[in-house]
Length: 245
Image (tube, rainbow, N blue to C red):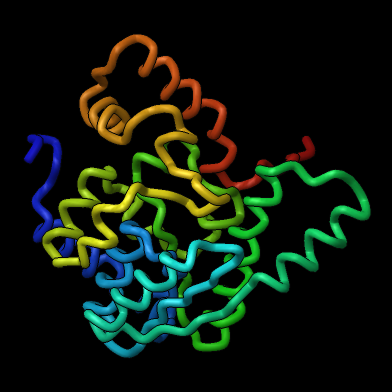
């Protein structure tokens, strides 16, 4: 294990106590998350289950998604006895794209990000009804370079794993004994068929993790990471307010 990777048992205990405190302070009963079938949301789902037991919900929201993702999400829930529900957003998304296309041409990325924003709406619709806080599954590597959808997967009340490097996500996934089918598959946001995170980012997570933790990378990689961080600063900030003098 790299010396900048913290022990998974310490990570788990710390995050669980943090989540419990935040939800209690908000006067909420539990938490809800979107479960994609990927490793980040799987780790978060197990953390929430350990904190709240039955007072949490993993919401699966397929939308022109790989059938494998839904299979893996259900596999996780069955192994850890996690409460879950499935809300298919395909028809809602198709209708949204149909109406939006009447106004202008919709870019591939904009259309893909709309899936994430529809999922955020679904999570808050159910979360508010159940008095659950919405928890997002963004990790530190993705959060640093802005690899998330503004008001989509970042649209949440809490970001419990956003201080974890991708390497740490994998370490805690193995510590929890999350199924290999989830841990070993290439990370993907599922934006379109065949999409993988590392291909879209243009760098492997190992390079990003190492640079964030140590500041060390070759000149090309360091420049790219710093550039992505600067361009995505607005995604990590609240909307600026025009203060009138």
